[in-house]
Amino acid sequence: MEKNKKVKVNKDCGCSIEDLMAENSMKKGLDPKKGLERLCSGHENDFEVFVDPDIEKTSNDFYMKKMTDGLPIIPPTRARVNKFLDYSSRRSDDVVAVLPPKQGKATVEKIAVNAVMAGCMPQFMPVVEKTVEAISKEEFNLAGVNATTHPVSVCTIMNGPVSYELAVNNATGCLGPGNIANATIGRALRLCLMNIAGAVPGIGDYATMGSPAKYSYCFGEAEEENPWEPLHVERGFEAGTSTVTVMAAEAPQNVNDHRSRSAEDLLDTIAYTAATAGCNNSHVPGELLVVMSSEHARTVWEDGWNKEDVENYIHENASVPVNLADRGGRKLDESWIVDNEVRITRSPRDVVLVVAGGAGRHTMIAHGFGTSSESVTLPLTINGNSVHSITEYKQK
Image (tube, rainbow, N blue to C red):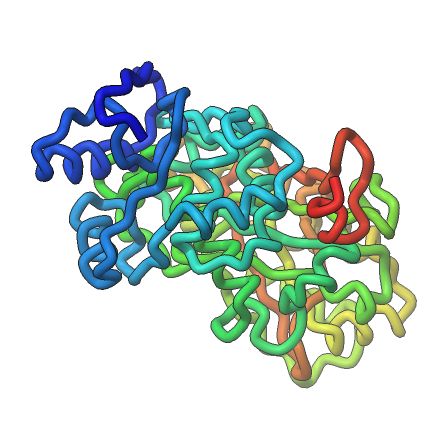
């Protein structure tokens, strides 16, 4: 690379990764605006990824610049980033999304850098890219999700053949540690939110206490264990289409019911657990994530209930007394009050019901962000055509 080669700098890039690379250059007595080491394709000409050969120092440098989640990172070398770019159907400098609050331009290359840092495998790149695209949709309201004091996180739910191909965990421990796809895809999205969107705790992310779900929140639906149609089919996609769904949700809460043997008894336990005074939904009704174990789902299904029945029942029975509901940050809209109660969902469609998890009679529920965000489901595609295998990205 020519040392004095001029590089046009995109002032609207919004990528904090540039700051670290500029500082590294200045420490070496070099001009950060000329052809130097950098991680950001806001520089439109030659692009290199710089990392210090000392891995521990690299992690510490990124951490000191508030560019990590506090955990060590994988240094994003040029070779590593290129492997991820091979799994994108776009050009490296294509802007996938513009992410608030910093209005950072999420190029393919920046997404790849953060995916490398998170510890993803290159094959995960299309999923991470699609989740970034999904959270940028207007109805998701990323600006509100990032800026709120509410501890809302971004939950990613995967459906379709690619979820199984990548071995995304949809069984025992799917919401916990132990699976590389679940852990790193969720983490990659969080790093994109910090390093591209600017959602750094205390700066662009104002959650009062935060949430462990902000580290990583990603799992697959156990479609083979689901007696009903899976989420993506319910939302109008073919069963063989691979999709990602992003939802603004709190950390999950367990519903322990080992004794109920009828659908109504079991759903009463779930509805009463979900009807929590103090959740956002209690004063601004919205979406509710219900992750039902296969044992619970089988109990309900064998009692003759279909998915619509379940969603209707939870919607109608999960409610909070109005005197407890009207204590949130936003004034309660009187139109939500029915018989001195406030339902935590606006309609049965707000009940986002999926089946996942291993053995055990448990369900997990996660309240959403009220009326402030709508979940988004997008298919994995290449040139508008549905993708059935991750290998199609390599063959594009």
